Length: 431
Image (cartoon, rainbow, N blue to C red):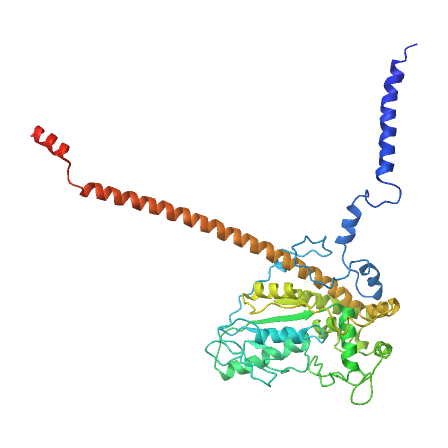
């Protein structure tokens, strides 16, 4: 009996066993190192859940913002959102000599005071802002005209109300500027470039609590929407008396009408879409969905926004967007009152749930912001390569031109030189 077929059959069986044993050795059971990445990519590309605190369950799995700002041009993880090149490219043709105005929407406890001071004291301008000692406001006038190019707390003051939000500013600023334009008999088109700063929602909420605990209030804010301020029934006060000094964190969290909760979404959304502060105009789920979608859309379409956690990148993106340069570099301050608050995990989770719309907005904002920074750096590198290429081309052309010019000069010299003795003798012989 011939054993050759049996031996041939044995070879692939042994190879298969070897491969299986090797796979179990390299990728033991439960290991994630050999799993295919398709599922991860699909999960990262999925849109953020919106409209309820349950959306936070997915967000908690994401890595937190590092305290130290990373300046390395690391590659970004797969985005949750489908941003277009138009969303990423934010170049503004800001005409400071014309009628264009930068409008700063200052959200409480987002580092807006520091950024606002950068705008009036730290930008390299042909006509710097005039900041007199002892005065909070500076005069930021255009070159050759006594008209402000900046609408902010430190330039025009709270002209549209204390910490006016998107709904208030977009209805107030154009009217105010139009009045000034009529007084100056100017008919040129005016562009308004809205900018703002955002912050990690938990840190921002804690910072506001500490600020209120020290006696700060914003009770003079107008909260104008559809031509009126909210009634007492629509926006009940969280405290009686002049302020809320000494409020505990639990008391701060327990007030259902506390505007600190989801403040960033509320201040960036068009509140007229949800009946302003009238909570009975629609159900809570629909209201939350509309507010978040509006805030995301308005933020994306703003000329610029920065993140408190990324000061250097904020400076870089502003400079690239407006073609303006700051005199000194921004500094990253990680030692804040909010950072020094020790939180139990259950308290942190409750703050996240109270700010579940802000958490989703910040995830969106951070993703878009970092992609814009990366996009601008890639564009900057392309511009630098193009400049170097053009410079090399210019030098080559200059060298060729110099060589041609030198040859022409040598030919002219040869024509002007007298005939030599040999040439003269040969000419006489021909005669």
